[in-house]
Image 1 (spheres, rainbow, N blue to C red):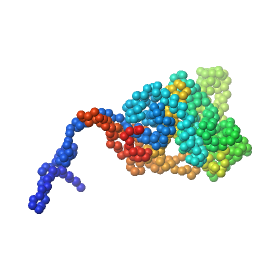
Image 2 (cartoon, helix red, strand yellow; image 1 turned 180 degrees about the vertical axis):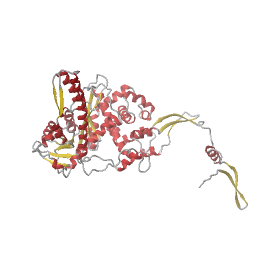
Image 3 (spheres, rainbow, N blue to C red; image 1 turned 90 degrees about the vertical axis):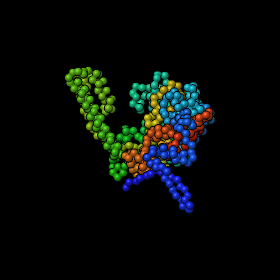
Image 4 (cartoon, rainbow, N blue to C red; image 1 turned 120 degrees about the vertical axis):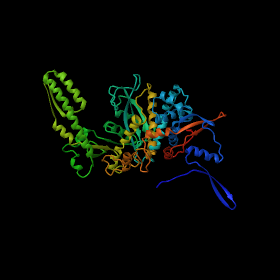
Length: 567
């Protein structure tokens, strides 16, 4: 069906007792803006040429700054940092900037004049000395900031499971004069680079509560040893269940926790056994037998080597398949390289037991499969064969891990112990936010110890902001809004059907288009604050651009109106 529209200029008049209408002109062929202008004139409005009455003298990105700052105020972050003043404004600006535009401090300093953050917090003209002074001020406030966060998220009144998660990661360093830089195991794959390490303490959901920076060659157990007195003495918490991986909470650390508990604290732990310990439990007369998993994926066992502790044995078939596949691939790759070396020895291009051994060592170290090969080396020969017995023994334990905990069954059943340990994935998510996805902590450009600590603390507090923003904006992003509860805690985590639908359609169930977290911030930045100056005056008036529906919704989801200023 065709639809026709006409725009007419008509007048009405009275002819005796009748009202008559007369068409004066047909405007249907005119452009829409001309029709609108004629309509406005006929209504008595005065029209002026574009730009004749006012000029937009400045336009600054505002929506992203306003949203992140609104969330900061909702979380009480300014008051958390310390008393009002220049240092607090600069510290808050550094944290908000790290969320919006993660760049080095000097780059951030030059960016502030080009955004409403710098104008509203009056930091646009800050000097580098002021920035460093604010970082030093923030480092001095670290204990009080973290104590308040611990009270918010670790106190038994808000954390009935009494769990706290702790894990360690690293970041490489530029330059050669950083006081904390050292060579150690790089979790970033930056071999041969100096680094620092830092550990994050979170609540069970992954909200960061505290961070500690240590030299780059610090072992995981040593870092754990340093965080425990902080929890007890500075946070005032003496009843907590600490969750850490098998390299973090070792037998020596557990012995230290036992000594603390004898002195009046009540620190429990959840961690995992190492492979040799699991193998010992799986020996012929050991309690870890494959028949335990005939009907279920987890079972509770005991052993005299772990007095007053519970052992939760788990078997994950998906993990077993993946480990078997990976082992087969690495064995094949190692065998290929060893065959190449054997051929060189046979042809006489590689000779001497020492030289051959060095070449074999490089291959073995590359894939870490040396334990699965028998090797014989002489000055003129090199032979090798797989250790099938050792490979089969390891394969029998594929997918099996054993958790150890001091928490009694009356407080946590076996499934809850497994769920608590798997919560360490939340700390790993925080590390991704801090290091790669959002905040770009790496590399470390600072030299002084306190400046490095301040930089990491800024990133940790920015992560606290991002954690809450991601949760609030889940309906507008690809974040899973309602992850399904796992009936079997050992099974891998699954995304909800709604999350899968969002990922495949790029739209919410309501039909609204989705963005990444960074994409949503970029969209919010298009909401500008404009300075308007009317002609023949010397007064500028601030006015926001018209928000898009998505920009309005983003502010609705964080429970804040769209503000004209961020302060």
